Image (tube, rainbow, N blue to C red; front, side, top):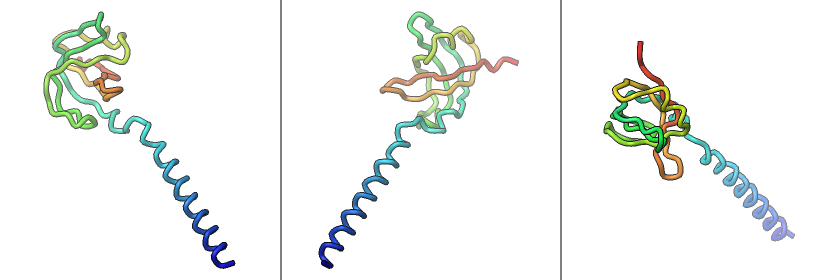
Length: 110
């Protein structure tokens, strides 16, 4: 009888641990909160047809990316109507399905 009680206790405890690990994994599917932190940049080129923008940017902390000049895709082509080459901007970006995507962008004009 003690063996049966011990076996049931172990099974119940094991199932509880499995349930906890499955629910904790759910959070990993969401974008990191740091993605909302803005980065300053200068617009070098805007390609509306390709939905791309070239930015000379500072460090992008949520992507662990040092300052550089690079081409980004944009989440929404309408974002490109707000900026032009030479503009100083603040933007947010994230890596989605292996591509670096600008999520938001705003001109820093006074």
